[in-house]
Image (tube, rainbow, N blue to C red; front, side):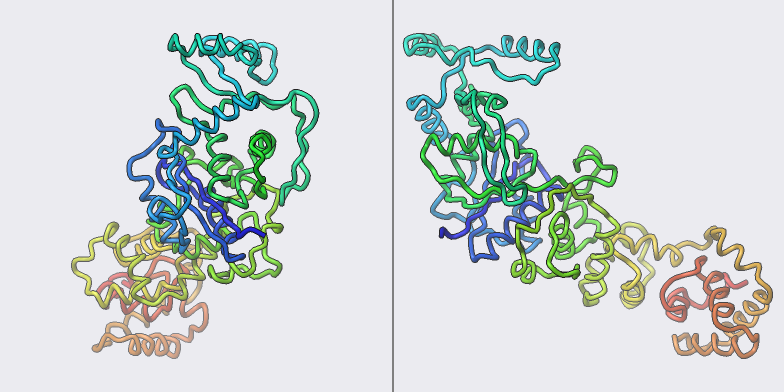
Length: 474
């Protein structure tokens, strides 16, 4: 059996959205599970969509996610070049070879003629399929048109009868009627290949054994297989995966404001948590476990456990997984993903490094991503804050005013402002006021922090400082 070789083949159009990254993760896990190679190929045949610096974005994203590239534009191997725009002569050579063996033909139809055909199909409410107008041109007619400088494309000649059948690892046996297969363009008039054609040529020449891609290609895969058969090449194993949808049920896209990987990273999500979450989006392990590092994922990954159903990108689930990773960070790593957001939101000039460190550490178990530190710590940077209805209602309970009065006196009497002495003040308030449990802690917390829940109360009070606490109590 050939060594497993998978390829991730993004277009250099900007930041990588999470659906794309999930495909890369699946391809990486599949390759590494069997000790194979993971190849990065840049599909830049559509030059109009190319974004400067996008290849660096792709490399940075994969590196952050601990996805190691075995071969690619910056990791030269024996199957390069790994950027399609550098492989143009190859596509022309193979397209012309197909014409020679009668599996493709030159098409000189103008854009105007094709537009009229599309309009006709629209009016008849049928899918547009090119009508094969140029497939019977003689050799002489073709030569004359080329010599006259007429623009042409090369189209694949499809069989119009019978059924094409292939097996997909996720969807099983797929059958498609050949009459539904359009004579697709292989080589465009500008000499660039179409996405579909370049993929087949590159996958073969790069010895790709497994192709993972979106299930929108399930019905067009027979076109690829006909190309493999025309050249007498072995076909790869196909693994089609369902889409990742937003919570609104729509396909994820930057235009809908859906987060790219870098957006998540910049908001303080940890790459290893994002990888963990995305690996479970449309794939399930044999156990009910949900927290996996990369090495474990590689060990247990089985593509047959990929789901046929679309997956919903659930930010709450990502937050839950990410919070697990945050809880296990050391303080320096935690500061890295939180402090930049605090600095952006608040003036920290009068805060010591020790104070900031203490603030961040008491919220370690209360945040699910780095930027969330801003909203949960606003009580330290705002003098007043409107109480929610639940807090207001609680503060009308009997005996609360006395508890607050006693606690204020205890705080005022503290000379050495330490967490231990603050804790003693709470205990003294319990003894003197008779309040205990919820009726002791909740009024104090609401009064000093404007909320019912939060980190350890003595730590919160310590960070607020004596003067602020007394002002709020009074």
